[in-house]
Amino acid sequence: MKKIISLLVLFLSTTLVISQSCSTYYPLTKDATFQITNYTNGDTPSAIIDYLVTDVTKKGNRTIGSVTSTSKDGDGKFVVENSFNVFCENATFSMNMESMVDKKATEQYKDMNLRITSTTIDYPNKISIGQTLKGATIKMTMDIAGSETSIDMNIVDRKVVDKESVTTPAGTFMCYLLTHTTNYEIASLNINDSFTSKVWIAEGPGIVKQEDYNTDQVIINKSLLTQFKQPSSKRKLQILHN
Image (cartoon, rainbow, N blue to C red):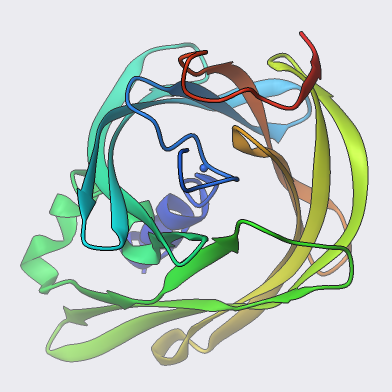
């Protein structure tokens, strides 16, 4: 039970990760760096994640970015390093939901025969207010005491609802505001719940801010873009000021 819940929390804490060349809403250029800081209790950091785009390659019509993330706790102490790929194709940036799960951290579940299947979460290069975006899913299945247990998560009702300026420690950005609902279920434990999210994305860095709310509309997690640097020769960013 404790391991299952910790795995769920692990996923939720890395979804922000919770995104150029071909990608408008992710810095898909080599040597681009950005930092996301998570807050679960007011303005006190609970986790700090630094991202580095280590390489960008072309395969057919697809541009693939290799990304390394370094996670630290709220005090800045190293926790884990992870690597994953993202890609853009047909004027859409995509990340496989499985890439959001820390592979090193999930090693503790290898004796449970952990299996993960998922779809991509997509961000079209051109979005507008009123637009509906495609949802995404991830399913984590494991064996516990001879019985199969699964965690199903579905991101639904993704909509573009507004456009507004957002200021973070990384600067001030003109953002589109997206909303979505995440439904999750652990059938074997009779757990079935959901939370809603607001996500602000800007040209250049991608996600600038995210807030997650429980069913009582109380914030349970907040994430901010706290650092961002992209080689200036690669793209002129639409940042209002730093």
